[in-house]
Structures are given as C-alpha cells and as structure tokens.
Length: 305
Image (tube, rainbow, N blue to C red; front, side):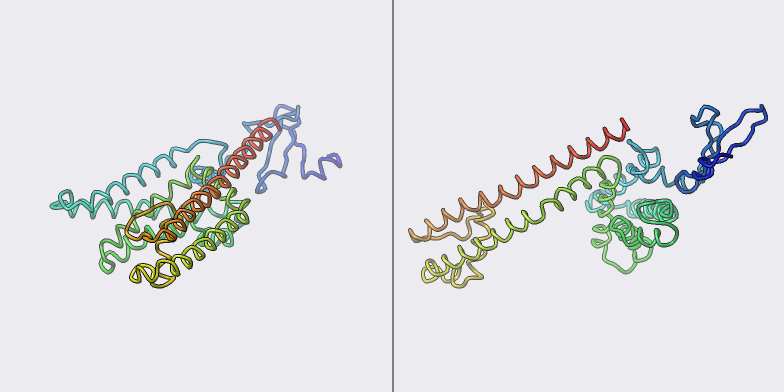
C-alpha cells in the first residue's frame, strides 16, 4: 500500500476476479467508500446506510438536495388534516353529536406526531449541524421546532382532562408552524431570518425613530388638545393611543384633534408615519433579495463544483 493511500486512510484489496479495488475510510461519519480500479466509486460496493441515517434523510429536508420525501408529504397531509379538524371542532353545528369522532381523531393525530417526535429525537444524532450523540439530541430538544412539537403533543396526550378546551385547540393549531420546516418553506424562513439578521441595525434605527416621533407627537397633542379634550388628550399616555393609530396609518377615527393647530400637527405626524412604515419594508425587501441571490449562487457553485 502506497504512502498516499496510507495518509488518506485508504487501502487496496484484490477482488475475486483478480482486480484491485480501493477502499476509503475518509467519508462522512466514517463510511467506507469503495472505488473501482479506475478510481470511480463503485455503487455496488457502497455499504447501505443504517436505518437511523435513512430515517434522518427521510425526515429532514435539509439532508437532501431538493424536494420532499414521501414521509414528509405524509406528515404535511397529517398536519393539514389535524388543523382542519381543530378548526371544524370550533363550530358547534359540526361538533354536535360527533364529539367522540373528534376526540378519536385528535388522539390519532397526537399519536402520529408523538411518533414523529420520537423519530426526530432518535435521528438527531445524525444531524452534523447539532453535533453527535446525546449532545445533538439535547440541542434538538431545546430548538424552537422541537418545542413547538412538544407543545402540540403534550396537552392532547396528558392534559386533556385538566386544561380548558379552547387552550387545547390553540395548542393544536401551533402544529401549522411545522409547515415552515418542510421543503421550500424551510428555505424561505431561513432566508428571511438571514435578511433580518443582516439588516438588524437599520431596522432598530427605524424602530427608535418611530418611537421618537410617536412620543414627540403625543406630547405636542397633549399640550395643544389636552385642554379641549381632556378625556382623550388629557395626558401623554392618553395621547399615545392617537399617536400610534396615526403613525401606523390605521386611523380608527375614535380620537382626533379638533383645533386648527392640532390638525396641522396630526397631518405632519401622518406624513411621517407613511415614511416610517415604508422604510423597514424597503430594507427587508432589499435584504431578502440579496439573500435569495446568495442562495442561488451557492447552489450553482455546488452543482458546478
């Protein structure tokens, strides 16, 4: 065996036909990689992945290049069915006389989600982003998707007789958030998170500017309109409600200035509100577009490389 093969952890073995094949031990997670005499991988000699690794690849869309597995599609259908069931259960005309049916459906969905939770917990050790062994499993347990899973399972299985029904229905609807972790939804949410992180300082600046304008406008309307409408502008906290409604361009119409100076100040506040609302939208749109372009460039480089 040559020194180069030794340094890479490779060795050569002779097959039954008298040909030399190279075995590599440098693959991911210590997998043995077999190669033909010409150096190309030999698919027939590749070891079959373990059950846990195959289940991990079927559960986690990030473990595949693109698309959803059949198991992912089944989970999506189960999530949608459980949400539709929870929505229909809130209608008294539909639920009346079918209480046992809805109860059994909820138990069936919760059991399926519990199996999914257990499978994801077991296969978390194969997620290289989380590490290895029990440390990877613990990191997965405290991750937001796992917490959402637990919130949707535990109340139905353990607290059905203790918690109010509307609380259970609310927790069941949390399951819809799992859609964001499947296939393209996961990529879109990750790109949005990346866009927010890259522009967090600009967004904080616009937030502080909005708070400043809100406080200043509420203070001015307190001095101008307070003596005329004490029940609406008699204090700065009372005037803050008008300021929030005006800056966000909602305009309920329940509180408005009556004096000429107060209306001028209200008009200025409304114009400033339009700009303050548009600023973060433009910042996020530009950052999201940049994140999409970076993702596409990364995929093209991966395919060509």
